[in-house]
Image (cartoon, rainbow, N blue to C red; front, side, top):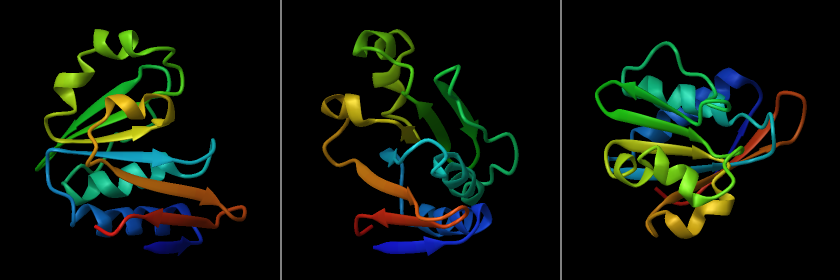
Length: 136
């Protein structure tokens, strides 16, 4: 499926609708360049599960956990150098509970479940985004 959005709010709205189709436990990989809208997507996704505030990029701390009607684990793997760093924070155990949204997953795909969902977000203009998902 392809979606075109023209603002962060529209990106959040698409994510909210997609969240309705995803049941825990599940891993969702968010790919896209810096500033593409991965965290905006996560905000909208989390809102579906009743998480209204506090969703921000975990760039410097690697992971945020949000508690709503489902647990949402939000990872940013950009600064991770190897799998041992992930293992040290209990990554394997955490992704088996709730729904894990993973930004910058590319270097670690071999460690993720094969039934993962990949969502690609591409900046096509200042506020415009192309969101490509698998059929959910």
